[in-house]
Image 1 (cartoon, rainbow, N blue to C red):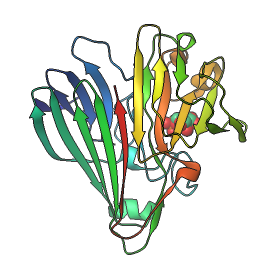
Image 2: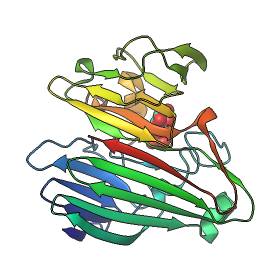
Image 3: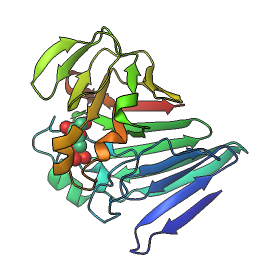
Image 4: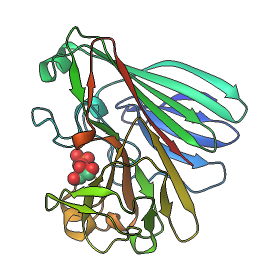
Length: 277
Ligand code: TA6
């Protein structure tokens, strides 16, 4: 079932439910802000102080960073502009009783061209079953090539930051964004302070190992993964989250960031795909 809904302030979202799971996706940013299997706890973290406000990114869920990740393109706002644009629902269909697919699109506007002077089509295909699959397809509709960096900046709900480990990144080179230094990861990641690292050359599955469950993240069309937790001090400075919210989430971001940028020639397209199960 696909239902078009609004919060009291008029902020619009789509709720998709089937016999496997339920998701909620805001039209602003095509932002998936809820995903839970039926009778289970949410897999995505959503800040309980996040405002659903026009022009402001939702804190939690899956912000889409596009056409620039972080400050990879310093001429654009942090994480680009797609997360605060109004997308359109293009199509939806029930594949079977357990699986629903919905497609959102975003095209360039006069406003977007003032920030980034290219013509493009951006599509987000979300397939909902016990697994959440997100595909972000960028097509260059311009007559000149463009460069993108991007990410599904996914916030995962966890029992407590002290309980979790992240597997699948051992032996991968990474840039520590806090020190701007390059290292190689040894073993699983655990957290005891602020963490903001960009892993490169990642082809394998990533595991988010919590006390009572393990989530698997498989990325395609991407070889970079960002792992982020703000920890105590940065959390206090962050907008849209409680001071101790850092205990409740970790971001594992399916990306094309830094050296993993993509150049698209006219008419070319690229798909970034993340499968969460
Ligand atoms: O992906 C990690 C990161 O770039 C952090 O450096 C960080 O502050 C964050 O994303 C959240 O960014 P935002 O613009 O959503 O506040």
